[in-house]
Image 1 (cartoon, helix red, strand yellow):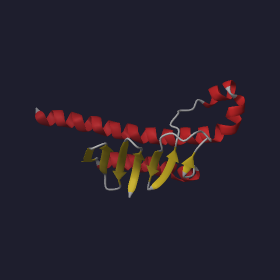
Image 2: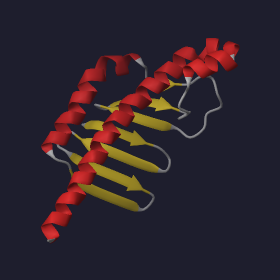
Image 3: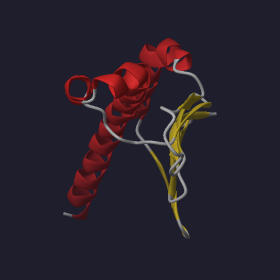
Image 4: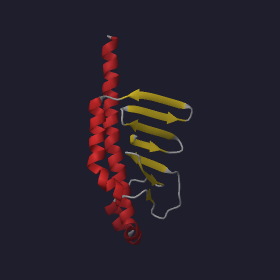
Length: 140
């Protein structure tokens, strides 16, 4: 099962339940194992947001022309979004009130999914930094 992931035309990132992290981009593919502590943190974040993520639905679209398909994966549950714009809801409300009225729910949903995604990515980035630091210590 994919605990966490992201797919687009350009790249794929999958964190499997066993801690295997797979990154594919074009012809490149990298596979590594992440530490148990990192895996537990990611699992905890997904568990914390699981019910709300499911309520987001499988597709998020504000009626805009479909651009590149972006698929966020949480415990094999896929949420497809065609617009990775980070919304500034208050700013939109003031500048474009009619548009805001029609899209606020979608904007909030996109921001939420993107926020959970970003939270997990920062855990993985921290793990990568620790891994590189440990490699430098081993070389000494």
